[in-house]
Amino acid sequence: MKLVHVSDLHLLPEGGELWGIDPFARLDACLKDIARFHSDAGFVVISGDLTEKGEIQAYQRLKALLSEFPIETHVMLGNHDDRAHFQSVFPGVPKDGRGFVQSSTTRGGSRFLFLDTLKGPPSSAGLYCDDRKAWLKAELAAAGDLPTYLFMHHPPFGIAHGLMDLIMLEDGEDFLALLRGHPVRHIFFGHAHRPISGQIRGISFSAPPSLVHQLPLVSGSVPTIYSDEPAMYAVVHASTDQIVVHMDAFLNRRPAQMGPDDDRGPWF
Ligand SMILES: [Fe+2]
Image 1: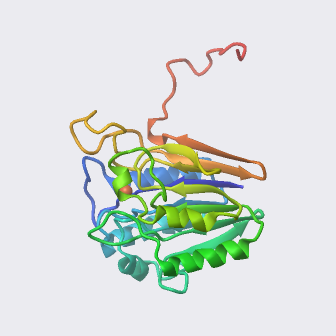
Image 2: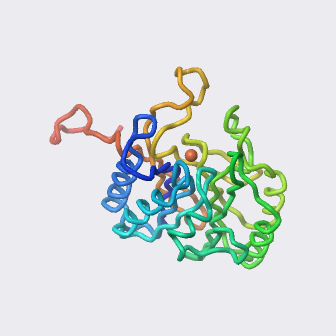
């Protein structure tokens, strides 16, 4: 099973730049690259912060781009999103029966769950309330022994980053307790605007950078809050006994300083 993980688009309601970057142009380039090189992916997931400020027009621009994209795409909410505005533009995106944008799918004998961790302004943190927990409990029970993969905008644990750890999922410990005893193999998240991987209590996790501005690993290493570092998307291969997550800096992919016919020589 191959899938592609994209996160943090921060689309604007009309053309223009956010911190010196055109988010729409970034997403357009990203989708074209994925369509060109990963058309065999089972699906693409965009794990929240679809927009910068949740405007209806920004969701309409996203919808227009996705209408021309040939691969099934699951769109999720982050703290920069507006649930009502999103749903007005994407009425067909499945909900969990309680008004949250949560859904699941089965592919290749595995369960993939798409969670809604949006708390709402003025907080940038994430929230997983009792209604959402009830849905997750039922989904995990229904999945039984099937390998299960979670997608969520906010990480339910600290990531050793002072700024991000202030706005992680608020009830992280309670959330992780829900997973105990279930075959959850990996947690994919966004929000961090950094490429991250690791493991918590036996569950591996990964996050790609944003498609736009990034958050420097060390605050103060650049004189601004955000930084200009490579955008990436993640290509994920999940099989019975292995998960591989590649991060591809698709805008920084250029030929090496060598001729196309230069002989690389033996592979050692
Ligand atoms: Fe973001």
